[in-house]
Length: 319
Ligand code: PYC
View 1 (tube, rainbow, N blue to C red):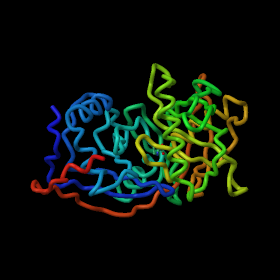
View 2 (view 1 turned 60 degrees about the vertical axis):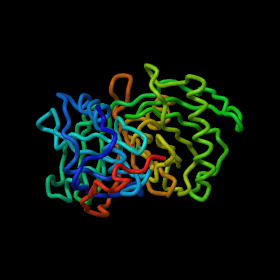
View 3 (view 1 turned 180 degrees about the horizontal axis):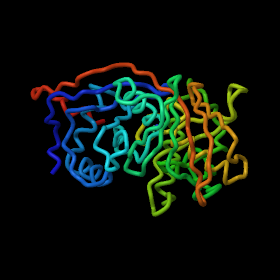
View 4 (view 1 turned 120 degrees about the vertical axis):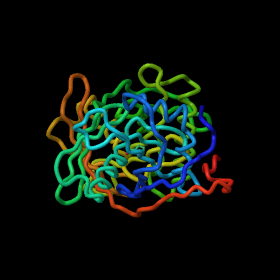
């Protein structure tokens, strides 16, 4: 059973940010996972050692903005690593900016060089390419639009419409929100997207197989004329993505393809709320698309997290 408090000694981490969004890669010192597949390892982590998650990325060692990336053994021996992504409220199927952070971290450690590398996640294997100039491309999991133009009544705001799409996580993508996608309006953007997520849940509007929609994406024209569009992304919990969001961009590409607005060979320049950009292209895969997202991460720190048994907040602070 989950003991409820963190009994770790020293956890080695490397911090980075991808287009502004932080990733903390956990190299060693975490729980011994059990399971033959990454899904089983994730189940074990979730049910038996969940206190690890908040102890590593929550306050006082981290913050709600950080995405954790726990490196673990891959089942596929040719993969560079297995990885389980999480944030302050739970686990992410896939994480685009986090995968770019993981590849950049492995390169920083000298474990990989420029070229193609596979990363195993609980929702599938992702092919990555580390380019000579430090940029990283992620060939994400098959992505698709599940439902189009779904109306939802948002208390206090009125009705909006959104597409439901899978890009490695479940997204509700809204264009008719009427809000300015600028960082100074972040409090308003968080309040609105949180209300939308609540309204979706209250109306039992879900992804396929009743999956919870936990990411809300607002769309707008780009600020820079060099880009294709801008977004604001509410992550699970109360935090927003500082980057254009890799899985969110994948979901957007799936919707654009479904609308006939994007085809293989086209390049989409997705601007995030800070103005940083991910480049997206697609290939076809049955009824789905295979998105490739390209961006860049930078290493910001190397640290050993310590756990004093007398520290009342050694397991992190749960808000
Ligand atoms: O880049 O896919 C992403 C992501 C998901 C949540 C935060 N970033």
